[in-house]
Length: 221
Image 1 (cartoon, one colour):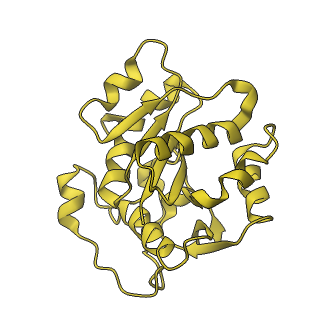
Image 2 (cartoon, rainbow, N blue to C red; image 1 turned 30 degrees about the vertical axis):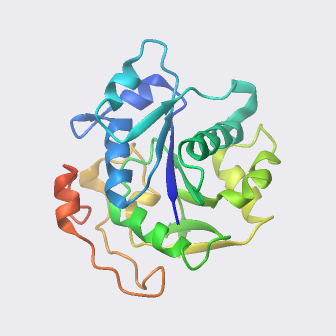
């Protein structure tokens, strides 16, 4: 299974916002890579090349956004298509709004693992039952995504998909899946981890991978 990360920012300012000393999309690209996602695609307006510069040296590739009239659905489709162009065998994409800055890398890993035995199901990570982001969409359902109305906002896009294709909410014990950049890291609820193995077996997270990527331990505020 090959799972891509599609990081979506509606504005250049949001893409470049300082997040623990890094431009937001650079931090998210490193986090997605350390969690096992590849390829990594970043979509954001970039009139001056600053987003591309922020991604230099990372595993991410930059993609220009879809036309605005395509709406949030169009940006998601564009990112998925770019991921498939990078790696033809990509089986799913993590649809990841850039404002969701506090997702732990182990949540990425857990979603990828859960995709393996359940390859055709939309997976929605949850914190105490509240579904959030990033959402794992199998690429076999891209036509269902294309069929969503362009005026739907991102949560409504996912709700429309969940109403038409197989979907599952997966408890992650990660407050970062529902708390966005408006929440200070010191105000995040404590990380708990999944109550059950998302893929049906225990996963031992490698702290060395987090350290190598220069990311903070998600269990620490």
